[in-house]
Length: 627
Image (cartoon, rainbow, N blue to C red; front, top):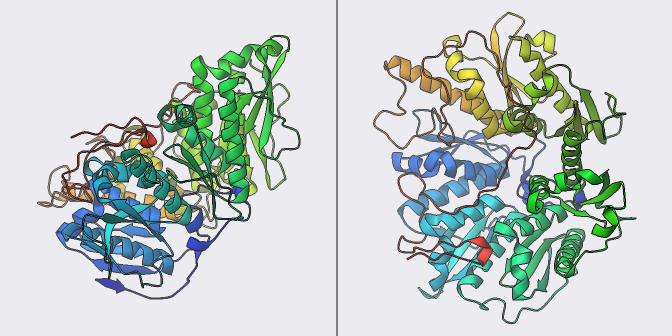
């Protein structure tokens, strides 16, 4: 099954790495597998038609899951049954193992060998009682998919080689991924089991404070009547606590589990205590001498505007940036003061994003409050903020519809970008700010039409860009009407794409992004669209995938979502973007965590048989068990 072009081993044990600075960490689901080194070694896996359909999954979801969890680049070229796996030795090993599990699942049991020396490196096994298996699986695998998405894992019910458990006693659920993702998913599954069979896991569970500096778990039992308050609407409060502290926070029954480093667990426990204390009234929290808080003073008449109806606006900012915010003044004191004090708790990066969002909101109601003395310029510090002053219609162009263009630039540059009044604030490390500023200026140059690389300063020496040549006759379709084709790929791959003329006056696609993996994904997406367009033209139609094979849905709607990749028959007279939309500062980024819907490919994703009609909702509370 495995075909490898080379076995050059640049082994790294990122799956076992632990951050020494937990307060400046990246997303938990990616931290262990994030790589600074590029490895272009390719392994090949031969597939059948049925295997390919199952590995791709519906709209490419299964393949993307393998990519996300393994850290490797996994591609199935058009009209090919040879899977290409690119990356470091460990990344390729993980990806091949997950592919093998998916293929085994299609025809029968997934069997794992506990004696494999790599078994415990990225695998956690949870014992699931037989009568809870359907509940944990969810309708067509819906609950497992939700957990995989939230924690960046991939999960299978498995049989361990040499295992002696009696059939029907318990089933073994294998969770693959980095440690933090596996631990979060494990607790989520435990919460589902506890919801199905109350007190099965928590009956004798006591409060506990771990001594571990790194991978520890603290437990705290709450009163059942406090659980709805601790969870929040659709679990929003729990997610807010987790992101603000950088800690895994899950509730198994009425026992709160907080997992992570000692510092993360301390902050998570403290934030949870404050939330519980709010049930009895306002909370007095000293903010002096704390390194997890930013205090922002805002006009008294803007407090309601920033808070929103039933705290909706403040909650939306918290949810977007993973911060925890409280007004520190009593109501009777607030009316007597000119300014209100807003405390923003969380990781430094999260606090800065939330702070800028609040500043933007206040500036919209009280122009000049924060920007009256602001000047354009750059900071020399490693961590800081650079500022750009917009001119004319640049602001609306750089914002995009409901803030879409701004968010795209921020994701591609891995930089915090927020617009406050007529200024763009770019916060982060020096490298992140530099990328963000370059991408912003390159975007604004496109307002006047076609651009040239030499005018922009685009060079192959820049480590965050790749250049790609596209057949000229396919450029209009790749671009799409008003750039919609490129925007879809940008959104899916966290990149910034545009056409520019090179020194030979030829059009080339510039692929910008903070990581090589994202740029590589964008390049594969463009190749898929070009291939689809060319096949459609050769056959005299509009594409159609792989002829009679209906399992391949990668093009033109690459990686799913149901969006057209290009506009049929509409050529673009100029290769330019059109992102000019109204200035809507408040974009609605609600987190829809519905668990329902569809299997993977034509096979479904019922990982433990199809007879279970259970659908667990709300982190173990308020579940809907359908027959």
